[in-house]
Each structure stands twice: as structure tokens, then as C-alpha cells.
Image (cartoon, rainbow, N blue to C red; front, side, top):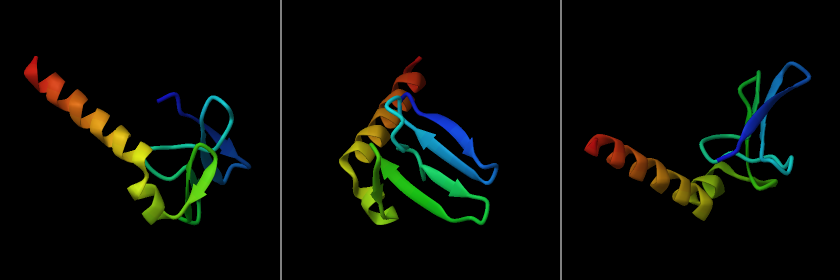
Length: 74
């Protein structure tokens, strides 16, 4: 997936892709100490509902399911 993370000002955890755009497929791209969360895919801000329904999110979840099935076959 290529995601990396960075602590911003000590109170925010943000996830970025290799192009330095906010991006995360397995959860919110920004998590504040207060508990607030923001979802981004390829730098585009999404509501949680938009995030859950996004095609790239579905592709990511499908790839996890395939990996799990393949690991069970070994």
C-alpha cells in the first residue's frame, strides 16, 4: 500500500501516500488526540460514509481477503 505516517505537532497522526497526499485505506488518515478523525483517499477528504463506500477501499478489503485465503491454504 505504501502508506507512511507522520506525527504533526505532537497531537495529530496523519497518513500520507508517496506523493505526500493524505491517504489511508484501512482507517482514518488523520487521528486527533481529542478522538476526531478525518478520512482521505489520494488527498481527497471524504466523510466516513464516502470512505467506506469508496471503490479503492473495496479493492483494498478484497486484497486482504485474498491474502487471508491464500495464507490459509498453506
